[in-house]
Length: 214
View (cartoon, one colour):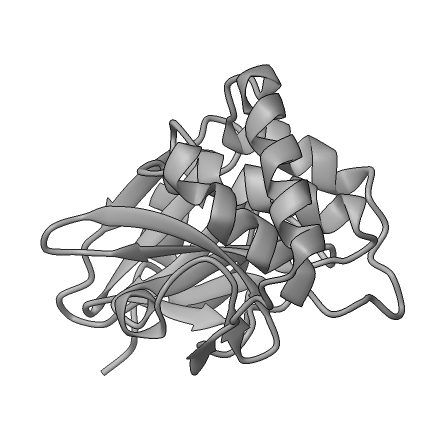
């Protein structure tokens, strides 16, 4: 029996603004241009992710993804590898200096405006990743002390932006990781260095499939 052209399996590449993750058997796509997520059901497991770059699927599926503007002709090589799941929480060291810096941070929180995925991506694009960075202990301690006074502490994007700014001022750098889950759908983000998460709990993060790191 011959395979029709619509059933032939081919590989296509995600557009630079599209990121994908396998989640609960299906695919979830993140469009960073519109800051929107898309659930792509895959009950027959016809869609196979190719690293972070693309997808392998029957031609009929690829055609639908292309019509939706999700694909490009060449793989985008600018994607940062997704880190392994964190196994521990980073504990900051409480010092007099941390207390002083926390008071200063609290005083400047009112100057932190609205935070969007687009603004975070733009900021990271202008910020080089250092070859060596200092320990985040001091920055994490300052953030932990200031956290009860952070008005947006329930919003992970805003919370990460504040901690990232503290780390940046100290000359450090952390991976900013975005994750998704289904049933019910939820998106989350956190800061991570190696196997340590800086602003969350590893058990909660284990519920999410990483989809983007910046």
